Image: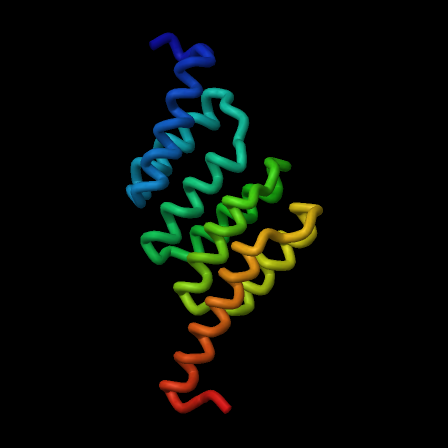
Length: 141
């Protein structure tokens, strides 16, 4: 392998693999293919980052998921509806209400359009789940 640039087809294949492994929660392989894709000149897209967010979220590694969100925001990649839904879903499952609220407001700012009903219902579902949990633990009023 001469260490030179790879073809655009090969780079696209690396990006596709990162996405596939990310969606199956194979974090180790997703990390590998994500790094290879970026190293070989694939522009870090929202789709690539969403795969990594989802991979870490499925494994319950919400700290790493948050790190990838910060990376996404600093690269200038477009924030997609799919990305926001992925983030909200995992924060909701993890019971992280402040993070859910921050992601919701992020969506309001970056999507620059009225939020889809799916995002609203995901936020409400997360809040309700948290409320029920508090009631069961005797901490709700």
